[in-house]
Image (tube, rainbow, N blue to C red; front, side, top):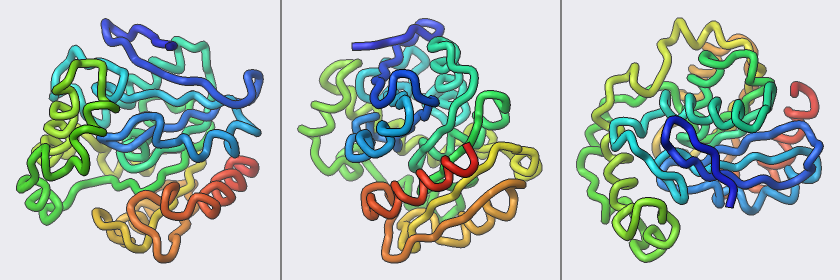
Length: 251
């Protein structure tokens, strides 16, 4: 299994697709792993070299920094570090949920790295109502199957799944600046960006991606009907066609 060492963290990643293709980095949601992208590997891999990591503290990647290090800004630094370790100077990025949110910081921290961004089911802030609901959750209530979670999150032992769930719940207590850039920073992002969002997203209603669209200087917005928080899973064919069209035009 391929790993890179980033300041003492063993970060797992997989490669698929065209070995000599243009790099496309696929980033998963919180509490998931890179395997979340399995249904899209053939379609995206027919055109690109795919880099698919497990984020810090997820799946096969460990986390020496503890729960506090599991935030979007740190995830962004980790992904940029992975690209450096693989000698990737320019890449396109597709992220879902947390994978999308971290790309806002990556685009600011490493502007020369980001050729194009696709943000699916993301946000640029957490509102108070969402935070209040979040704080009522427990590791068991946010995990549909403890057995499956234990099998997926393996780097830190049999209770690794619980640490991931606790870190997700802890996001509700993070100050805004730990996870997100300020609006005035978002207005400086130069990478072409596609925002893909479901009209039935349970966490972030459509006004969230619409506002983000207005903040980003070079953005396109696609709202998919009868679609939830994970457009790549709810509408896989639409999602693939829309993303590949965007990347062909802008990346």
